Image (cartoon, rainbow, N blue to C red; front, side):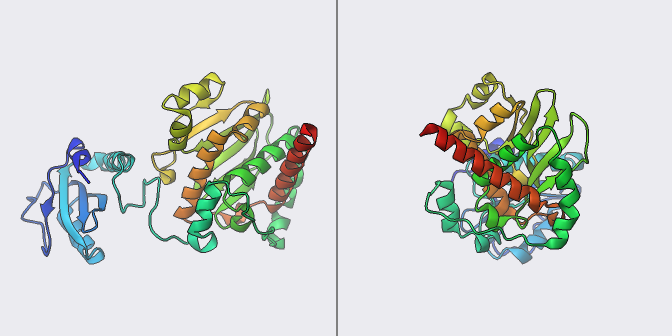
Length: 332
C-alpha cells in the first residue's frame, strides 16, 4: 500500500536494510532520538520510539527475521510518547497494517481469547447470530463470594438498586461476547468500588481487560451511566454527524479514551435511567459497545479477578431477563 501517510507524518523514504547488521552509518551520533517505522516483507509496519535508533534496530533484528526497511524522524526525548501515540493512531486509522500492540484499537494475530471463544464464534456473535448459546455460570469460588457478600448486600439497600441491576444485566448480556464463558477471566464487575457513599456514590463498574467501560453512579435524577464504545460503528450506522445526533438526544460525548483501547473509542454518558436504557437497546450503540469490548478481550484477560462480584452478576442477569420478559408479555 502507499506510504503517503508516513510522508504526511514527516517520515522520509524507507531505507533498504536487508542484511545490514547496523544502521549507524545512516544516523550520526547525537541525531538518533526519535520515532522509527519498520517495514516487513508482507507489507506490515511497526512504529516505535528510541533514544538511540541504532541500538533499537539491533534489538529488532533479533526479533524479526523479515525486517527489510527502516524510516526514522528525529523527535525530542520529551515528545516521544505523545508523537509515537499520534503516529500509531493516525496510521491505524488510515488503514495501515501495524504489528504494534500498545496504542492499537485492533490487535491482530492469534490471541488467548481465541481459545475460549473461537474466531468463528466471535464473528457470529458480532453478527448477532440467534443460534449461539452461552455457557452456564462458571464462577463457583465460594471464598470470592464470601468476600463480596457484604458489598452485595449493601448494594441491594441502595435507592436505585433494582434499576441498576436491570441496566447492568442488559449491558452484560448484550455487549460482552459469551458473558458467562468469559466472566472473571476477561471481564469483571466491581460492586461499590468506592465504598458506600451518598447521593453521588459509584454503584458498580465493568472492567474489560484493563479498561473501565461501564460505570453507574447515583445523582439527583437517579442513575447516571457512563459507557465507552467504538467510534467506527457509530460513524458507519449513524453517519459522520453521530456525535451531534447523540448530543441532541441529551447524551454527553466526552471523547475520553483509555490507552488500552486505542484511538477508536469515545465516552458517552446518560444522566437518567431511561436514557441509558435506550443506549442499551439501540442497534447502533450496542454494536459500538460490543465491538470495543470484543477488541479488548482479544488484548488479554482482566487484571483484577479478585475484585469481581459474582452475586451482582447473577442478580443483574436475572433482573434483565425479567425486565425483557415483562416487556415481551406487555407487547403481546
